[in-house]
Image (tube, rainbow, N blue to C red; front, side, top):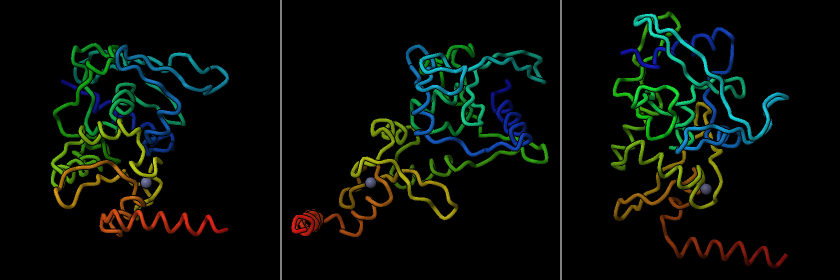
Length: 238
Ligand SMILES: [Zn+2]
């Protein structure tokens, strides 16, 4: 069976051809513009996007794609925002779980119009994409790599992470802000999984700064409280 992988590959290639930005939008960027109802599978704009696309209207356009190998024509909902054309099933996944799916999103009942979260599942196949030379490559995505390190270090799956991310609304468990720190490639980091160094159990997702702060203080409650007290003492005297 042909999956939407191929479709995505083609889409990526055409986007590349149009010289559009390829980096995927962040959870915050998508969630501030689009509301997704997992029960009904409906997407609604949360803001006026253009003169014609107003806040409160349904988001997305249905496009038909004919699969070359099967000859079947299938219709998919696409949502266009900030110069990206996003496959709605992927947007649904992202808005529900907090991260872009690391594999193709499949429709449980085969109906590509049924975008309820209960109808969406990840494909078992590896993530395939089409390289610049037109060849299909099995690609290890950043998310997949993250999946491995999450499992290795914390025994949690990407779905567990996504669930925590969703519960925390994509924000740090301490400062309550989204991550802004960038890694050496200039990409905004993902929230770190903070764990108790004594028991090894996972606590919450933290931003780089707050996670470093705990590390520097060696998780010592007295030092952290004394630090807060110190700041308060010196700001009150001004
Ligand atoms: Zn923080």
